[in-house]
Image (tube, rainbow, N blue to C red; front, side, top):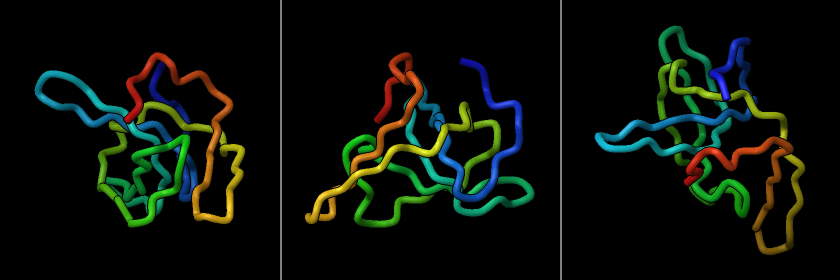
Length: 96
């Protein structure tokens, strides 16, 4: 899949890439704020199972955003667990 080629807005879900020395890690994130040089993004570490209990945010360069994702189908239980399912194939990425 190619990088996004259209603008993103606050509250958009995105696939972001964190490059390490030997590999890359991918996360689903929610754009919180757009700055002139970077974006504040809430990172979901268990993106298909739960909504993070604590705020895990990162300031990322716009080039770290690979895909603009559609809003997920969300369901939840009474125990604070929320399931988010995205209607795109992300199997080509090692999602963390």
